[in-house]
Amino acid sequence: MFWLQFLTLLLCIFIGARLGGVGLGVMGGVGMAILVFVFHLQPTAPPIDVMLMILAVITAAGALQAAGGMDYLVHLAEKALRKNPKRITFFAPIVTYLFTLCAGTAHVAYSVLPVIAEVSRESGIRPERPMSIAVIASQQAITASPISAATVALLAMLADYKITLLDILKVSIPSTFIACMIAAFVASKMGKELNEDPEYLKRLKEGLIPKLEEKKEFVGVKGAKLSVILFLVGTFLVVLLGSFEALRPGWIVDGKLARLSMPNTIEMVMLTIAALIIIFCKPNVESIVSGNVFKAGATAVVAIFGIAWMGDTFFNGNLNMIQGSIQHLVTSAPWLFAIALFILSILLYSQAATVRALMPLGLSLGIPPALLITMFPAVNGYFFIPNYGTIVAAINFDRTGTTGIGKYVLNHSFMIPGLIATFTSIGIGMLLISIMF
View 1 (cartoon, one colour):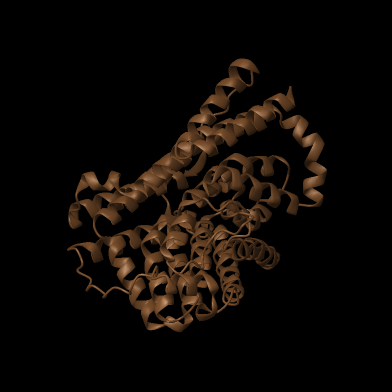
View 2: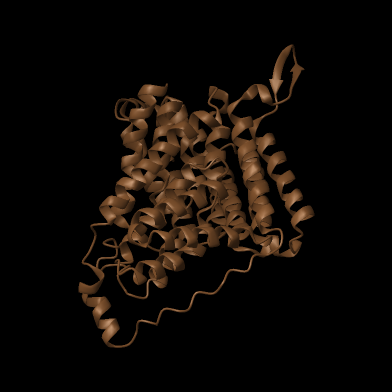
């Protein structure tokens, strides 16, 4: 019975991944129906708190985008990159990392990728180098952002273990950032120099390389700067309230002091920020939900609803068997659980869905919460198969042909920086928790 249920789980994940978009979430619903009605597993509670937190955050991020805040940030990024063109392999990942860290979504990188491609070509630097690590840095920053869906999901699960948002961030931010810089150094040595690259020279000879366009002067939308300030204030408040429990209001319930939960705190703060952006920056309200940031976040909500609910139900229904079989193995060699997170993230294309589907199993297997925090970057494995949105966009934006997918598919431009960044960040995290916890 266990193996039939496990096969059902895998089939739904594979089919959902092939369908793409909300397909992952709805196939999770199909899996739930089979597990409950056919195998009679008792359904667990759906991850409502996580879904509502993500919805609140993407509403605020969508308002920021609609108010022109994202465009203003891209303008600032372009100025920074053009000031340091020769060091773009290091500055590009810093920019995409900071963008994602503040916005909570890697989709903000789409706007910066054309700038990175253009500046690197102007400077005679092989675009593959900054483009590849810039995409990887935007993915790594998801596990360092205080308002990303993945961090929110992890925080909700570890709250009962007295783990605060600051506990997660003080490990995830330095570990992922340092790992990205190490990966950037490796990326800076990748491939031939641009003027020696055969593909680039061939395209140049055939006239396939478009001429560099004249730079247009940036015209900011009224309220764009204010929307950025408001959004950053919201992010700061989330970090502050998540790090210091005493700042959150409390009530006496059954003779004990009960503080306002972090899920409710995040929901209130981010919805308030969205309201302030709408009131004072006056964006088109309809464009908030039609922007790519909101759409990507809404897709993540559906994915978590279906896939995480199905995963929870499967693991909960078979917990005794799973614990008896692999608990000793995982606790004696915890890196095996990190590999499991990495593999599942390749299949799910979502850090948040991976966290919500597999991290509860780690807790039930007795893996210490601090160790799970160090393994958090392992959920960034969706660069492995090169068909994720930002990866495809980076390949298309590089008109020189240096960024691409190799003959064997897996030998693509993002593999080496991705593997180095992911597993180096886990290693650095292990070192940090030995000092901090």
